Structures are given as C-alpha cells and as structure tokens.
Length: 322
Image 1 (tube, rainbow, N blue to C red):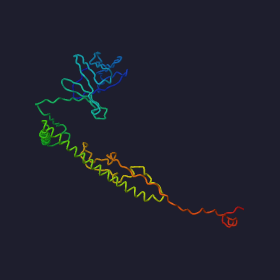
Image 2 (cartoon, helix red, strand yellow):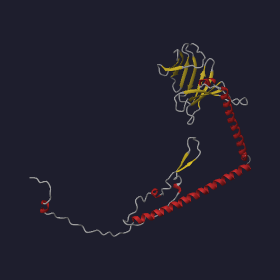
Image 3 (cartoon, one colour):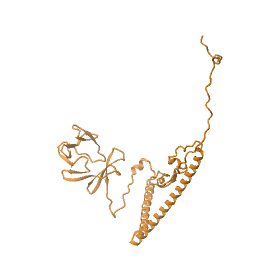
C-alpha cells in the first residue's frame, strides 16, 4: 500500500462492492484502494474488520453483540491496542459516540442537528493552572476581507474578550456572597421559614382571587337567568343552550391575557396565559330552570275554502286552446 502524504486534508470515497456488506475506501483523486471494511457472518454476534488490501493484513477488528449495541470494542493490531467506543448521546444530545485516544476524548456527532453529515471532534481537557485558553488570530481571513488595520482589530477583539472574563468573575463573587445564608442549620431553618411564609401568602392570594372570580361568575349567572326568563316567559320554554355551562361565562373572561415576560427563548417576548386555567376549580351551582307558564293563546276560527263558480273561471284571461 502506498503511504499517503500527511497533508492538510485527505479525502476518501466510500463505495459498496459485492457483497454489499463490504465497503472500499479509495483516494478521491487517484482512486487508489486504501482500506476495505469486511463484515463477518457470526451467529448471534456482530464483527467487522478493517483490512489492508495489498497484503491482506487486518488493521483493526470490532466485535459486539449486535450492530445496535451501545458499547463496542475496537482492537487495533501492530501494535495491539484496545479502544472502547460508547454511545453517549440521547434524547437531548442526539447522535453522539465517544472514544478515547492518547488521553483525549473524541466524539462522532452530526454537523448540524438534522444533518446527515458526521464529523469527529476532539474534546480536549483543560489544563489547570496553566492558562485560561488559547486565542488564535486568523490573519488569512483578515486578508480575505482586506482589513487595513489588523493590529487595531486584534487589540479591539482582545479588549472585548477581557470584559467577558471580568463579568464572569464578578458574577461568581456575587453568587458566593448570596450563598452565605445557606451555611449552618440556623440560617437554613430561617430560610425554610421564610419560604413557608411566602408560600402561604401566595396560597392565600390565590384563594382570594378564586373567590372573587367565583362571586363574579355567580352574579353574572343570576343576571343572565333573570333576563332569559323575562324574554322567554311568553312561549313558556327554557332558553336555548341552557345546559351548556360555557355559554353563561361572560365575554370578558374569554379574552386572552397578553403580557410581556422574560423567557428562555430570546425571540419570544409575549406569553399567552389561559384565562380558564383554574376554571375547573370553581364549583358553580346553576339556578334550577323555572317551570313553563301556561299562556292562553286565542286563535281565530279556521276559514272555510272558497268555492269558485264556472263563470268566474271563464272570465279569467289567458291562452285558450281551440
């Protein structure tokens, strides 16, 4: 096998062959076969090999219970080395597989959340007490955008970055000051009592609000019943929709409440509050329907049918058939 030059980029094309379980990795520009993946037929297990095509030497092997196993073992040969591949994703992270190499962690992830492109990233461990990080200046990008004062842009970027560090430090100091009341049993008990008082106060406020809403709803129902009985007493029937409780709610309560609030989504500035969120807690007794009143209706006697004489029919104008 020809050794590949260690340049900046190396492109491989993946092609299926016969049988389809075999995949060939070829150089994109020269079409030279570099590696071959072979899947072995093992009953009740999953096993593959990465083979060097010229000599047929096995470069690596992988075995697991099945291809869907969350943990797989990769065995490298010449020299022998064991690499553990483990699925570290989930519902929140999505596709993510991790393995260790020379003390660093590498992860296979999707390039974008819903993309089919995969990339392997190195998750480097921070070195304690050595440095905060590494600041890299890409001067070739400055040349692309034709930046005339590159040193000025560099200093402006560094100054803005330093302000981020100071803000993080200040927030950490303020957090330590506010966490002092948590130390000790006495301070913890006092904080617990304060929380209980606040909860009782909020509960009492909620009950008063529910009581007020209940009284307003009862008054509206009584008023609605009086108006309905007065208009429908003429025919002695109950108003339509009497059994529908939601038809007696005032229109004012059906208007949604719109308020500005701070949410986790920076693009969301308006929150919708359901006005009927606590309507199920209201126990409203509807007034019983009034009995229909007997109304005497006088109707005129029926009119007998008119008798038409033949002379009247002959006097009518119209087409005649000869």
